[in-house]
Image 1 (cartoon, rainbow, N blue to C red):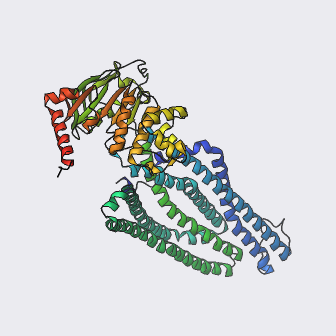
Image 2 (cartoon, rainbow, N blue to C red):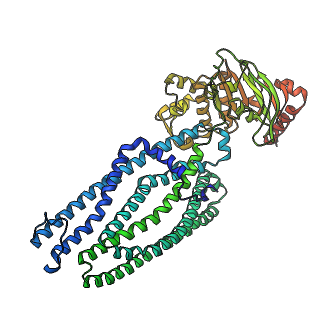
Length: 608
Protein backbone atom coordinates (compact mmCIF):
# COMPACT_ATOMS: atom_id res chain seq x y z
CA UNK A 1 0.00 0.00 0.00
CA UNK A 2 2.95 2.35 0.56
CA UNK A 3 3.60 2.34 -3.18
CA UNK A 4 0.13 3.78 -3.83
CA UNK A 5 0.70 6.95 -1.82
CA UNK A 6 1.17 9.90 -4.16
CA UNK A 7 2.01 12.58 -1.63
CA UNK A 8 2.22 16.32 -2.07
CA UNK A 9 4.08 17.75 -5.03
CA UNK A 10 6.25 19.83 -2.73
CA UNK A 11 7.07 19.36 0.92
CA UNK A 12 9.44 22.00 2.31
CA UNK A 13 10.57 19.77 5.17
CA UNK A 14 11.46 16.88 2.87
CA UNK A 15 13.07 19.18 0.32
CA UNK A 16 15.35 20.76 2.93
CA UNK A 17 16.41 17.31 4.03
CA UNK A 18 17.01 16.18 0.47
CA UNK A 19 19.06 19.26 -0.33
CA UNK A 20 21.20 18.39 2.67
CA UNK A 21 22.69 15.58 0.58
CA UNK A 22 23.95 18.21 -1.86
CA UNK A 23 25.72 20.19 0.87
CA UNK A 24 29.03 18.27 0.62
CA UNK A 25 29.11 19.16 -3.07
CA UNK A 26 28.54 22.92 -2.83
CA UNK A 27 31.22 23.86 -5.33
CA UNK A 28 30.00 21.80 -8.32
CA UNK A 29 26.41 22.79 -7.51
CA UNK A 30 27.38 26.48 -7.46
CA UNK A 31 29.23 26.15 -10.79
CA UNK A 32 26.23 24.32 -12.23
CA UNK A 33 23.84 27.06 -11.12
CA UNK A 34 26.14 29.71 -12.62
CA UNK A 35 26.15 27.79 -15.91
CA UNK A 36 22.37 27.58 -15.68
CA UNK A 37 22.13 31.33 -15.31
CA UNK A 38 24.42 31.92 -18.29
CA UNK A 39 22.53 29.41 -20.44
CA UNK A 40 19.16 30.95 -19.55
CA UNK A 41 20.51 34.44 -20.32
CA UNK A 42 21.73 33.28 -23.71
CA UNK A 43 18.23 32.02 -24.49
CA UNK A 44 17.05 35.64 -24.87
CA UNK A 45 20.12 36.91 -26.77
CA UNK A 46 19.47 34.95 -29.96
CA UNK A 47 16.11 36.59 -30.83
CA UNK A 48 17.58 40.02 -30.04
CA UNK A 49 20.39 39.38 -32.54
CA UNK A 50 17.79 38.28 -35.08
CA UNK A 51 15.88 41.53 -34.47
CA UNK A 52 19.07 43.55 -35.04
CA UNK A 53 19.80 41.70 -38.27
CA UNK A 54 16.31 42.30 -39.63
CA UNK A 55 15.94 45.94 -38.51
CA UNK A 56 19.44 47.01 -39.59
CA UNK A 57 20.11 45.04 -42.76
CA UNK A 58 17.03 43.21 -44.13
CA UNK A 59 14.41 45.95 -44.34
CA UNK A 60 14.35 48.85 -46.82
CA UNK A 61 16.83 51.62 -46.00
CA UNK A 62 14.10 54.04 -44.96
CA UNK A 63 12.69 51.65 -42.39
CA UNK A 64 15.98 50.71 -40.69
CA UNK A 65 16.23 51.29 -36.96
CA UNK A 66 19.19 51.94 -34.69
CA UNK A 67 20.49 49.03 -32.59
CA UNK A 68 22.61 48.88 -29.42
CA UNK A 69 25.50 47.44 -31.45
CA UNK A 70 25.60 50.17 -34.13
CA UNK A 71 29.04 51.25 -33.00
CA UNK A 72 30.42 47.73 -33.43
CA UNK A 73 28.67 46.60 -36.60
CA UNK A 74 29.59 47.46 -40.16
CA UNK A 75 27.22 49.48 -42.32
CA UNK A 76 27.76 47.06 -45.16
CA UNK A 77 24.90 44.47 -45.01
CA UNK A 78 27.07 41.50 -45.96
CA UNK A 79 29.77 42.30 -43.42
CA UNK A 80 27.25 43.25 -40.74
CA UNK A 81 25.22 40.06 -41.20
CA UNK A 82 28.44 38.06 -41.07
CA UNK A 83 29.41 39.80 -37.81
CA UNK A 84 25.99 39.07 -36.27
CA UNK A 85 26.16 35.47 -37.48
CA UNK A 86 29.57 35.01 -35.86
CA UNK A 87 28.27 36.51 -32.61
CA UNK A 88 25.26 34.19 -32.79
CA UNK A 89 27.56 31.22 -33.48
CA UNK A 90 29.78 32.20 -30.53
CA UNK A 91 26.74 32.42 -28.25
CA UNK A 92 25.57 28.98 -29.41
CA UNK A 93 29.05 27.52 -28.79
CA UNK A 94 29.32 29.06 -25.33
CA UNK A 95 25.76 28.01 -24.54
CA UNK A 96 26.62 24.45 -25.60
CA UNK A 97 29.71 24.46 -23.37
CA UNK A 98 27.93 25.81 -20.30
CA UNK A 99 24.97 23.47 -20.82
CA UNK A 100 27.32 20.47 -21.07
CA UNK A 101 29.14 21.61 -17.92
CA UNK A 102 25.88 22.14 -16.07
CA UNK A 103 24.43 18.74 -17.05
CA UNK A 104 27.69 16.90 -16.34
CA UNK A 105 28.17 18.48 -12.92
CA UNK A 106 24.58 17.91 -11.81
CA UNK A 107 24.51 14.33 -13.05
CA UNK A 108 27.81 13.64 -11.29
CA UNK A 109 26.70 15.39 -8.11
CA UNK A 110 23.39 13.54 -8.19
CA UNK A 111 25.20 10.21 -8.40
CA UNK A 112 27.44 11.15 -5.46
CA UNK A 113 24.41 12.18 -3.41
CA UNK A 114 22.63 8.93 -4.25
CA UNK A 115 25.77 6.99 -3.35
CA UNK A 116 25.69 8.61 0.09
CA UNK A 117 21.96 7.96 0.43
CA UNK A 118 22.25 4.29 -0.54
CA UNK A 119 25.13 3.90 1.89
CA UNK A 120 22.99 5.32 4.69
CA UNK A 121 20.10 3.03 3.75
CA UNK A 122 22.36 -0.03 3.80
CA UNK A 123 23.80 0.96 7.17
CA UNK A 124 20.30 1.49 8.56
CA UNK A 125 19.06 -1.85 7.21
CA UNK A 126 21.94 -3.65 8.93
CA UNK A 127 21.26 -1.92 12.23
CA UNK A 128 17.53 -2.60 12.37
CA UNK A 129 16.19 -5.42 14.51
CA UNK A 130 15.07 -8.76 13.21
CA UNK A 131 11.56 -7.79 14.30
CA UNK A 132 11.53 -5.03 11.68
CA UNK A 133 12.09 -7.61 8.93
CA UNK A 134 9.27 -9.70 10.34
CA UNK A 135 6.93 -6.77 9.58
CA UNK A 136 8.33 -5.63 6.22
CA UNK A 137 8.66 -7.74 3.07
CA UNK A 138 12.12 -7.95 1.50
CA UNK A 139 10.82 -6.72 -1.86
CA UNK A 140 9.62 -3.45 -0.31
CA UNK A 141 13.00 -2.81 1.33
CA UNK A 142 14.85 -3.55 -1.90
CA UNK A 143 12.57 -1.06 -3.67
CA UNK A 144 13.61 1.63 -1.18
CA UNK A 145 17.29 1.20 -2.02
CA UNK A 146 16.81 0.85 -5.78
CA UNK A 147 13.68 2.29 -7.39
CA UNK A 148 12.98 5.03 -4.84
CA UNK A 149 16.59 6.21 -4.86
CA UNK A 150 16.55 6.27 -8.67
CA UNK A 151 13.49 8.55 -8.54
CA UNK A 152 15.41 10.94 -6.28
CA UNK A 153 18.37 10.77 -8.65
CA UNK A 154 16.09 11.98 -11.45
CA UNK A 155 15.05 14.85 -9.20
CA UNK A 156 18.61 15.84 -8.31
CA UNK A 157 20.28 15.38 -11.67
CA UNK A 158 17.59 16.86 -13.91
CA UNK A 159 14.31 17.61 -12.17
CA UNK A 160 15.25 20.45 -9.83
CA UNK A 161 17.70 22.02 -12.25
CA UNK A 162 15.27 21.78 -15.15
CA UNK A 163 12.53 23.37 -13.07
CA UNK A 164 14.85 26.21 -12.12
CA UNK A 165 16.00 26.58 -15.72
CA UNK A 166 12.44 26.65 -17.04
CA UNK A 167 11.30 29.21 -14.47
CA UNK A 168 14.34 31.40 -15.09
CA UNK A 169 14.01 31.12 -18.87
CA UNK A 170 10.30 31.89 -18.69
CA UNK A 171 10.96 34.96 -16.54
CA UNK A 172 13.73 36.27 -18.81
CA UNK A 173 11.70 35.64 -21.97
CA UNK A 174 8.67 37.52 -20.60
CA UNK A 175 10.94 40.35 -19.48
CA UNK A 176 12.63 40.58 -22.89
CA UNK A 177 9.29 40.47 -24.73
CA UNK A 178 7.78 43.13 -22.50
CA UNK A 179 10.80 45.31 -23.16
CA UNK A 180 10.32 44.95 -26.93
CA UNK A 181 6.51 45.22 -27.07
CA UNK A 182 4.07 45.12 -24.13
CA UNK A 183 1.14 44.62 -26.51
CA UNK A 184 2.58 41.53 -28.22
CA UNK A 185 3.67 40.23 -24.83
CA UNK A 186 0.11 40.39 -23.50
CA UNK A 187 -1.09 38.56 -26.61
CA UNK A 188 1.31 35.67 -25.97
CA UNK A 189 0.72 35.63 -22.22
CA UNK A 190 -3.04 35.44 -22.91
CA UNK A 191 -2.40 31.93 -24.21
CA UNK A 192 -1.09 31.00 -20.77
CA UNK A 193 -4.44 30.10 -19.09
CA UNK A 194 -5.50 27.54 -21.78
CA UNK A 195 -2.02 26.02 -21.67
CA UNK A 196 -2.13 25.98 -17.86
CA UNK A 197 -5.53 24.26 -17.95
CA UNK A 198 -4.19 21.62 -20.33
CA UNK A 199 -1.15 21.20 -18.06
CA UNK A 200 -3.36 20.66 -14.99
CA UNK A 201 -5.46 18.04 -16.80
CA UNK A 202 -2.31 16.36 -18.08
CA UNK A 203 -0.76 16.38 -14.61
CA UNK A 204 -3.80 14.69 -13.07
CA UNK A 205 -3.97 12.03 -15.76
CA UNK A 206 -0.23 11.38 -15.70
CA UNK A 207 -0.09 11.31 -11.88
CA UNK A 208 -2.78 8.64 -11.69
CA UNK A 209 -1.04 6.66 -14.41
CA UNK A 210 2.33 6.91 -12.68
CA UNK A 211 0.78 5.78 -9.40
CA UNK A 212 -0.78 2.74 -11.04
CA UNK A 213 2.44 2.03 -12.90
CA UNK A 214 4.44 2.21 -9.67
CA UNK A 215 2.05 -0.20 -7.95
CA UNK A 216 2.18 -2.55 -10.94
CA UNK A 217 5.99 -2.52 -10.95
CA UNK A 218 6.02 -3.33 -7.24
CA UNK A 219 3.67 -6.27 -7.90
CA UNK A 220 5.85 -7.48 -10.77
CA UNK A 221 8.99 -7.32 -8.64
CA UNK A 222 7.35 -9.10 -5.73
CA UNK A 223 5.86 -11.80 -7.96
CA UNK A 224 9.12 -12.43 -9.80
CA UNK A 225 11.13 -12.56 -6.59
CA UNK A 226 8.76 -15.08 -5.04
CA UNK A 227 8.49 -17.28 -8.12
CA UNK A 228 12.21 -17.27 -8.90
CA UNK A 229 13.09 -18.15 -5.31
CA UNK A 230 10.54 -20.96 -5.44
CA UNK A 231 11.25 -22.08 -9.01
CA UNK A 232 11.90 -25.64 -7.80
CA UNK A 233 8.42 -25.88 -6.29
CA UNK A 234 6.91 -24.35 -9.45
CA UNK A 235 8.48 -27.09 -11.56
CA UNK A 236 7.75 -29.82 -9.03
CA UNK A 237 4.01 -29.09 -9.04
CA UNK A 238 3.87 -28.16 -12.75
CA UNK A 239 2.76 -24.60 -12.01
CA UNK A 240 4.50 -23.03 -15.01
CA UNK A 241 1.32 -22.42 -16.98
CA UNK A 242 -0.57 -21.08 -13.97
CA UNK A 243 2.35 -18.83 -13.03
CA UNK A 244 2.51 -17.53 -16.59
CA UNK A 245 -1.22 -16.67 -16.44
CA UNK A 246 -0.83 -14.85 -13.13
CA UNK A 247 2.20 -12.95 -14.40
CA UNK A 248 0.30 -12.07 -17.57
CA UNK A 249 -2.44 -10.47 -15.47
CA UNK A 250 0.02 -8.43 -13.40
CA UNK A 251 2.05 -7.50 -16.48
CA UNK A 252 -1.10 -6.37 -18.28
CA UNK A 253 -1.96 -4.08 -15.33
CA UNK A 254 1.40 -2.40 -15.88
CA UNK A 255 0.79 -2.08 -19.61
CA UNK A 256 -2.71 -0.64 -19.12
CA UNK A 257 -1.41 1.88 -16.60
CA UNK A 258 1.36 2.92 -18.94
CA UNK A 259 -1.08 3.22 -21.84
CA UNK A 260 -2.94 5.91 -19.91
CA UNK A 261 0.32 7.86 -19.56
CA UNK A 262 0.96 7.44 -23.28
CA UNK A 263 -2.52 8.75 -24.04
CA UNK A 264 -1.94 11.75 -21.74
CA UNK A 265 1.32 12.57 -23.49
CA UNK A 266 -0.35 11.94 -26.83
CA UNK A 267 -2.93 14.71 -26.41
CA UNK A 268 -1.00 17.13 -24.18
CA UNK A 269 1.84 18.06 -26.50
CA UNK A 270 -0.36 18.45 -29.61
CA UNK A 271 -2.82 20.61 -27.61
CA UNK A 272 -0.04 22.89 -26.40
CA UNK A 273 1.41 22.96 -29.89
CA UNK A 274 -2.00 23.85 -31.32
CA UNK A 275 -2.48 26.67 -28.81
CA UNK A 276 1.02 27.85 -29.63
CA UNK A 277 0.30 27.88 -33.36
CA UNK A 278 -2.96 29.78 -32.82
CA UNK A 279 -1.04 32.29 -30.75
CA UNK A 280 1.60 32.63 -33.46
CA UNK A 281 -1.15 33.18 -36.04
CA UNK A 282 -2.72 35.87 -33.86
CA UNK A 283 0.74 37.35 -33.34
CA UNK A 284 1.35 37.45 -37.09
CA UNK A 285 -2.01 39.14 -37.73
CA UNK A 286 -1.77 41.67 -34.93
CA UNK A 287 1.93 42.35 -35.54
CA UNK A 288 1.36 42.80 -39.27
CA UNK A 289 -1.22 45.53 -38.67
CA UNK A 290 1.08 47.22 -36.16
CA UNK A 291 3.96 47.15 -38.68
CA UNK A 292 1.79 48.67 -41.43
CA UNK A 293 0.83 51.42 -39.03
CA UNK A 294 4.48 52.05 -38.23
CA UNK A 295 4.10 51.18 -34.54
CA UNK A 296 6.24 48.08 -34.71
CA UNK A 297 9.33 46.90 -36.59
CA UNK A 298 9.62 43.70 -38.55
CA UNK A 299 12.60 42.67 -36.41
CA UNK A 300 10.52 42.79 -33.24
CA UNK A 301 7.84 40.58 -34.82
CA UNK A 302 10.46 38.06 -35.97
CA UNK A 303 12.01 38.08 -32.49
CA UNK A 304 8.59 37.45 -30.95
CA UNK A 305 8.15 34.36 -33.08
CA UNK A 306 11.38 32.99 -31.60
CA UNK A 307 10.41 34.05 -28.09
CA UNK A 308 7.03 32.38 -28.54
CA UNK A 309 8.68 28.99 -28.97
CA UNK A 310 10.84 29.68 -25.92
CA UNK A 311 7.69 30.66 -23.96
CA UNK A 312 5.67 27.49 -24.52
CA UNK A 313 8.50 24.95 -24.19
CA UNK A 314 9.19 25.66 -20.46
CA UNK A 315 5.48 25.36 -19.70
CA UNK A 316 5.44 21.91 -21.27
CA UNK A 317 8.57 20.90 -19.36
CA UNK A 318 7.19 22.21 -16.05
CA UNK A 319 4.07 20.10 -16.45
CA UNK A 320 6.16 16.98 -16.97
CA UNK A 321 8.66 17.82 -14.21
CA UNK A 322 5.76 18.30 -11.80
CA UNK A 323 5.18 14.56 -11.92
CA UNK A 324 8.87 13.90 -11.23
CA UNK A 325 8.69 16.27 -8.25
CA UNK A 326 5.57 14.54 -6.95
CA UNK A 327 7.05 11.05 -7.34
CA UNK A 328 10.29 12.19 -5.72
CA UNK A 329 8.41 13.63 -2.74
CA UNK A 330 6.58 10.33 -2.21
CA UNK A 331 9.83 8.38 -2.62
CA UNK A 332 11.60 10.68 -0.14
CA UNK A 333 8.78 10.15 2.36
CA UNK A 334 9.27 6.39 2.16
CA UNK A 335 13.08 6.57 2.23
CA UNK A 336 13.23 8.90 5.20
CA UNK A 337 10.64 6.74 6.94
CA UNK A 338 13.14 3.89 6.70
CA UNK A 339 16.11 6.05 7.72
CA UNK A 340 14.17 7.37 10.72
CA UNK A 341 13.30 3.87 11.90
CA UNK A 342 15.07 3.43 15.23
CA UNK A 343 16.47 0.02 16.21
CA UNK A 344 14.99 -1.25 19.45
CA UNK A 345 17.95 -3.50 20.25
CA UNK A 346 20.79 -1.11 21.03
CA UNK A 347 23.94 -1.09 23.11
CA UNK A 348 23.77 0.68 26.48
CA UNK A 349 25.64 3.95 26.90
CA UNK A 350 28.31 2.18 28.98
CA UNK A 351 28.22 -1.50 27.97
CA UNK A 352 29.50 -4.04 30.45
CA UNK A 353 32.48 -6.17 29.39
CA UNK A 354 31.64 -9.73 28.46
CA UNK A 355 32.81 -12.21 31.13
CA UNK A 356 36.33 -13.45 30.45
CA UNK A 357 36.24 -16.83 32.17
CA UNK A 358 33.69 -19.63 32.21
CA UNK A 359 30.21 -18.15 32.51
CA UNK A 360 26.86 -19.81 32.99
CA UNK A 361 23.74 -18.92 30.98
CA UNK A 362 20.62 -18.25 33.07
CA UNK A 363 17.01 -17.81 31.97
CA UNK A 364 15.08 -16.29 34.87
CA UNK A 365 11.26 -16.31 34.55
CA UNK A 366 11.38 -15.33 30.89
CA UNK A 367 8.14 -14.36 29.15
CA UNK A 368 8.05 -13.42 25.48
CA UNK A 369 5.50 -12.78 22.71
CA UNK A 370 6.13 -11.69 19.14
CA UNK A 371 2.77 -9.93 19.05
CA UNK A 372 0.64 -8.50 21.85
CA UNK A 373 -0.03 -11.10 24.55
CA UNK A 374 0.21 -14.18 22.33
CA UNK A 375 2.90 -15.68 24.58
CA UNK A 376 5.45 -17.93 22.91
CA UNK A 377 7.46 -18.42 26.11
CA UNK A 378 5.83 -18.52 29.54
CA UNK A 379 7.84 -18.25 32.75
CA UNK A 380 10.87 -20.20 31.45
CA UNK A 381 13.73 -20.63 33.92
CA UNK A 382 16.88 -22.77 33.67
CA UNK A 383 20.66 -22.56 34.00
CA UNK A 384 23.28 -23.89 31.59
CA UNK A 385 26.61 -24.49 33.31
CA UNK A 386 29.95 -23.67 31.61
CA UNK A 387 31.07 -26.48 29.31
CA UNK A 388 27.70 -28.21 29.49
CA UNK A 389 25.97 -29.61 26.40
CA UNK A 390 22.23 -28.97 26.51
CA UNK A 391 19.63 -30.29 24.08
CA UNK A 392 16.24 -28.63 23.58
CA UNK A 393 13.38 -30.67 22.12
CA UNK A 394 9.66 -30.21 21.69
CA UNK A 395 6.85 -30.05 19.20
CA UNK A 396 6.86 -27.45 16.42
CA UNK A 397 5.92 -24.06 17.90
CA UNK A 398 6.98 -25.02 21.42
CA UNK A 399 9.39 -22.05 21.58
CA UNK A 400 12.74 -23.78 21.01
CA UNK A 401 14.16 -21.37 18.41
CA UNK A 402 12.74 -18.41 20.31
CA UNK A 403 15.06 -19.29 23.21
CA UNK A 404 18.05 -18.85 20.91
CA UNK A 405 16.71 -15.61 19.39
CA UNK A 406 16.38 -14.14 22.87
CA UNK A 407 19.78 -15.41 23.98
CA UNK A 408 21.44 -13.73 20.99
CA UNK A 409 19.27 -10.67 21.65
CA UNK A 410 17.58 -10.56 18.28
CA UNK A 411 14.55 -9.75 20.44
CA UNK A 412 14.28 -8.50 24.02
CA UNK A 413 12.37 -10.42 26.66
CA UNK A 414 9.03 -9.02 27.75
CA UNK A 415 9.39 -10.13 31.36
CA UNK A 416 12.20 -11.72 33.32
CA UNK A 417 15.87 -11.66 32.35
CA UNK A 418 18.63 -13.61 30.64
CA UNK A 419 22.05 -13.50 32.27
CA UNK A 420 25.51 -14.63 31.27
CA UNK A 421 28.04 -14.77 34.05
CA UNK A 422 25.54 -13.05 36.34
CA UNK A 423 25.14 -10.00 34.05
CA UNK A 424 21.94 -9.26 32.16
CA UNK A 425 22.62 -9.56 28.42
CA UNK A 426 20.99 -6.15 27.93
CA UNK A 427 24.07 -4.70 29.63
CA UNK A 428 26.32 -5.98 26.81
CA UNK A 429 26.89 -4.51 23.40
CA UNK A 430 24.88 -6.85 21.08
CA UNK A 431 27.83 -7.05 18.68
CA UNK A 432 30.17 -8.09 21.50
CA UNK A 433 27.59 -10.56 22.79
CA UNK A 434 27.14 -12.32 19.45
CA UNK A 435 30.89 -12.45 18.83
CA UNK A 436 31.18 -15.21 21.45
CA UNK A 437 28.56 -17.44 19.83
CA UNK A 438 28.85 -19.78 16.88
CA UNK A 439 25.50 -20.76 15.39
CA UNK A 440 24.40 -23.21 12.71
CA UNK A 441 20.84 -22.82 11.43
CA UNK A 442 18.46 -25.34 9.92
CA UNK A 443 18.59 -23.67 6.52
CA UNK A 444 22.24 -23.05 5.62
CA UNK A 445 22.69 -19.66 4.00
CA UNK A 446 25.74 -19.22 1.80
CA UNK A 447 26.70 -16.13 -0.16
CA UNK A 448 28.08 -15.78 -3.66
CA UNK A 449 31.85 -16.15 -3.41
CA UNK A 450 34.48 -18.74 -2.57
CA UNK A 451 34.21 -21.38 0.14
CA UNK A 452 36.89 -19.63 2.17
CA UNK A 453 34.96 -16.35 1.92
CA UNK A 454 31.86 -18.08 3.25
CA UNK A 455 33.76 -19.62 6.14
CA UNK A 456 35.53 -16.37 7.02
CA UNK A 457 32.41 -14.27 6.41
CA UNK A 458 34.24 -10.96 6.72
CA UNK A 459 36.79 -12.08 9.33
CA UNK A 460 39.83 -11.62 7.09
CA UNK A 461 42.15 -12.03 10.07
CA UNK A 462 41.33 -15.74 10.21
CA UNK A 463 44.42 -17.53 8.98
CA UNK A 464 44.14 -20.38 6.49
CA UNK A 465 45.13 -22.91 9.15
CA UNK A 466 42.00 -21.92 11.08
CA UNK A 467 39.92 -22.69 8.00
CA UNK A 468 41.64 -26.02 7.50
CA UNK A 469 41.21 -26.98 11.16
CA UNK A 470 37.53 -26.03 11.15
CA UNK A 471 36.87 -27.95 7.93
CA UNK A 472 38.69 -30.98 9.29
CA UNK A 473 36.70 -30.92 12.53
CA UNK A 474 33.40 -31.18 10.64
CA UNK A 475 34.64 -33.79 8.15
CA UNK A 476 34.54 -31.29 5.26
CA UNK A 477 38.21 -31.22 4.31
CA UNK A 478 38.08 -34.23 1.98
CA UNK A 479 35.27 -32.66 -0.02
CA UNK A 480 37.11 -29.33 -0.31
CA UNK A 481 40.30 -31.05 -1.47
CA UNK A 482 38.28 -32.85 -4.16
CA UNK A 483 37.30 -29.51 -5.73
CA UNK A 484 39.45 -28.04 -8.52
CA UNK A 485 40.25 -24.81 -6.67
CA UNK A 486 39.94 -26.15 -3.11
CA UNK A 487 39.01 -23.40 -0.65
CA UNK A 488 38.96 -20.90 -3.55
CA UNK A 489 36.12 -22.79 -5.27
CA UNK A 490 33.40 -20.23 -6.03
CA UNK A 491 29.82 -20.84 -5.02
CA UNK A 492 26.76 -19.47 -6.79
CA UNK A 493 23.87 -17.63 -5.15
CA UNK A 494 22.78 -19.36 -1.90
CA UNK A 495 25.50 -21.96 -2.42
CA UNK A 496 24.18 -23.23 -5.74
CA UNK A 497 26.27 -26.03 -7.22
CA UNK A 498 26.76 -28.13 -4.08
CA UNK A 499 24.41 -30.33 -2.06
CA UNK A 500 22.41 -29.27 0.98
CA UNK A 501 24.55 -31.46 3.19
CA UNK A 502 27.74 -29.86 1.90
CA UNK A 503 26.25 -26.41 2.50
CA UNK A 504 25.47 -27.41 6.07
CA UNK A 505 28.99 -28.66 6.66
CA UNK A 506 30.33 -25.31 5.43
CA UNK A 507 28.00 -23.65 7.95
CA UNK A 508 29.49 -25.87 10.68
CA UNK A 509 32.99 -24.87 9.61
CA UNK A 510 31.98 -21.19 9.58
CA UNK A 511 30.76 -21.46 13.17
CA UNK A 512 33.88 -23.28 14.41
CA UNK A 513 36.44 -21.15 12.56
CA UNK A 514 35.89 -18.34 15.07
CA UNK A 515 36.55 -20.64 18.03
CA UNK A 516 33.34 -19.55 19.81
CA UNK A 517 32.88 -20.06 23.54
CA UNK A 518 29.24 -20.99 22.97
CA UNK A 519 27.95 -23.21 20.18
CA UNK A 520 24.32 -23.29 19.05
CA UNK A 521 22.94 -25.85 16.61
CA UNK A 522 19.36 -25.04 15.61
CA UNK A 523 17.93 -28.08 13.79
CA UNK A 524 21.30 -28.23 12.07
CA UNK A 525 20.92 -31.84 10.90
CA UNK A 526 17.23 -31.84 9.95
CA UNK A 527 17.86 -31.08 6.26
CA UNK A 528 20.85 -33.36 5.64
CA UNK A 529 21.00 -36.90 4.39
CA UNK A 530 21.79 -39.88 6.61
CA UNK A 531 25.42 -40.08 5.54
CA UNK A 532 26.01 -36.37 6.25
CA UNK A 533 24.20 -36.67 9.57
CA UNK A 534 26.54 -39.52 10.50
CA UNK A 535 29.53 -37.34 9.65
CA UNK A 536 28.10 -34.49 11.69
CA UNK A 537 27.48 -36.81 14.63
CA UNK A 538 31.10 -37.91 14.52
CA UNK A 539 32.17 -34.28 14.51
CA UNK A 540 29.80 -33.21 17.28
CA UNK A 541 31.92 -34.73 20.01
CA UNK A 542 34.90 -32.66 18.86
CA UNK A 543 32.79 -29.54 18.29
CA UNK A 544 31.25 -29.37 21.76
CA UNK A 545 34.45 -30.20 23.58
CA UNK A 546 35.57 -27.32 25.81
CA UNK A 547 32.60 -25.08 25.07
CA UNK A 548 29.04 -24.58 26.21
CA UNK A 549 26.66 -25.99 23.59
CA UNK A 550 22.94 -25.80 22.94
CA UNK A 551 21.49 -28.26 20.43
CA UNK A 552 17.92 -27.90 19.16
CA UNK A 553 16.80 -31.01 17.35
CA UNK A 554 13.79 -32.97 16.22
CA UNK A 555 15.82 -36.12 15.67
CA UNK A 556 16.23 -37.44 19.19
CA UNK A 557 19.03 -39.74 18.04
CA UNK A 558 21.35 -36.73 17.69
CA UNK A 559 20.95 -35.49 21.28
CA UNK A 560 20.92 -38.62 23.41
CA UNK A 561 24.47 -37.95 24.61
CA UNK A 562 23.68 -34.43 25.81
CA UNK A 563 24.43 -33.70 29.48
CA UNK A 564 20.85 -32.57 29.94
CA UNK A 565 17.75 -32.37 27.76
CA UNK A 566 15.19 -29.57 28.08
CA UNK A 567 11.68 -30.49 26.92
CA UNK A 568 9.58 -27.51 25.78
CA UNK A 569 5.82 -27.82 25.45
CA UNK A 570 3.44 -24.97 24.60
CA UNK A 571 5.95 -22.32 25.60
CA UNK A 572 6.86 -23.82 28.96
CA UNK A 573 9.83 -25.88 30.14
CA UNK A 574 8.08 -29.10 31.18
CA UNK A 575 10.90 -31.59 31.76
CA UNK A 576 14.65 -31.60 32.38
CA UNK A 577 17.05 -34.53 32.63
CA UNK A 578 19.22 -36.98 30.74
CA UNK A 579 17.88 -39.22 28.02
CA UNK A 580 17.39 -42.17 30.34
CA UNK A 581 15.91 -40.07 33.15
CA UNK A 582 13.33 -38.53 30.81
CA UNK A 583 12.35 -41.91 29.37
CA UNK A 584 11.85 -43.18 32.89
CA UNK A 585 9.48 -40.29 33.64
CA UNK A 586 7.21 -41.41 30.77
CA UNK A 587 6.17 -37.81 30.15
CA UNK A 588 6.34 -35.48 27.11
CA UNK A 589 9.82 -36.66 26.09
CA UNK A 590 8.77 -40.30 26.29
CA UNK A 591 5.80 -39.57 24.00
CA UNK A 592 8.08 -37.77 21.52
CA UNK A 593 10.46 -40.70 21.58
CA UNK A 594 7.65 -43.19 21.06
CA UNK A 595 6.25 -41.21 18.12
CA UNK A 596 9.64 -40.99 16.46
CA UNK A 597 10.44 -44.62 17.14
CA UNK A 598 7.06 -45.65 15.69
CA UNK A 599 7.78 -43.59 12.54
CA UNK A 600 11.14 -45.27 12.16
CA UNK A 601 9.57 -48.69 12.63
CA UNK A 602 6.95 -47.94 9.97
CA UNK A 603 9.70 -47.00 7.55
CA UNK A 604 11.31 -50.47 7.83
CA UNK A 605 9.56 -53.07 5.61
CA UNK A 606 8.61 -56.33 7.27
CA UNK A 607 10.62 -59.37 6.09
CA UNK A 608 8.80 -61.72 3.72
